[in-house]
Amino acid sequence: PRSTATSAMQTATTVFVTNRQPSNTSKENMGVLTVYLDRVENLKDEDKFGKSDPYVILHLEQDNLGRDKSFGKRESSHKKDDLNPVYGETFTFENIPGLNNVVLNVTVRDDDIGHDEKLGDCKFKLEKLGLTETPMEVEAVVDHKGLGLLRKHAKIYLKLSYKATAM
Image (cartoon, rainbow, N blue to C red; front, side, top):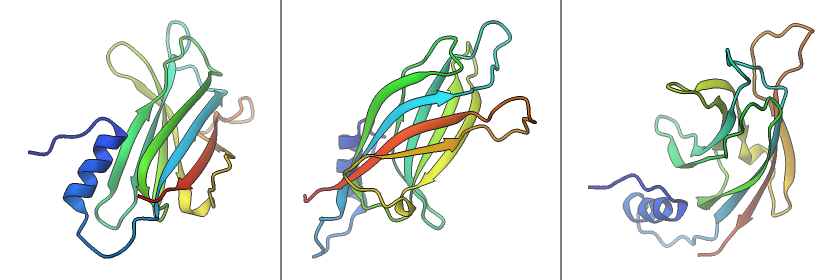
């Protein structure tokens, strides 16, 4: 039975062996997506005691009609009592077959005892960004609740790059 692989390399190997049909096409479109998680600003405090303890989950998937394909999830460090956390963390997703229909789903959660609350989320459609080996700075609003004029939206700041590799 096939088990869910935890590392990107194990996932890529399993995907290649079980899901790819033999063909004469080259594998030159495979590549590595690098995500630099810089910071999140203006998070809403969801804790009753203290401040939120945020962390970020990055989930990379290919958005196919009917059946999405996951390339794995990565999780940042957890920041204690911080509504403007600075991460400075780098994550890689290897053996990505190009960026067509590939979406980076980003979720910011509050580390709580019991159930972790979602503080916000956003999506980046990677094929529309024109990523190269040079890191591209991107930002997005991660809270979409009506906030009025008294508070800014929470935003996440990332740097994304993609390098095609020959296999």
